Length: 233
Image (cartoon, rainbow, N blue to C red; front, side, top):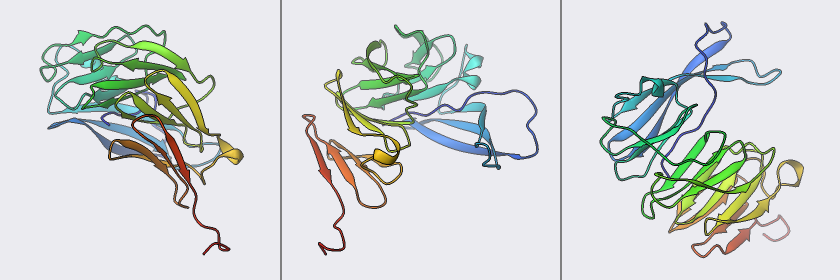
């Protein structure tokens, strides 16, 4: 999976209880985007994070200096860089020297874009609206919606994907269209906390620290496993 996530943007002076952080997102071979953001060190009433700016690695913003304030970046793993901004979704095949506008049929621009470099398929999420691409991000179409959900993680394998909300909620998008609830959020979650999503032999695996796991296979088959209880050991 190649891509980044969104925190918001600010150009105002930050209060002293904020600290600056940096995070790098790989977009493909020798390509990346580095995000600098500031987060409050106070957890009450809630931790706040603000985007300070993006820095290109291995490519240039070229004629789009506004990409320093982009919502998110992604890549197809083969040299294409994809960016979501407040005004459009764009991509470049020549390391940023020229940018082309992607076909995007949503009102809100995506906060998360994830791609499969082998299948050149992708999933983008904009305020719970799920869009898919079959041409490495050149065009996108709306397929499903998760109203009121804030998706924080997406992993794509072929035309299947897993989407998590960071609160134990997990959904599988199968064949680019069929959306299935794998785990509810909060107290009813199958997981203890937020599971980690990863790829394993072409399958998408979600696993928490306690050992609860779900596996979405190539054909969309979902397998579940839980750690042994003390009575089973």
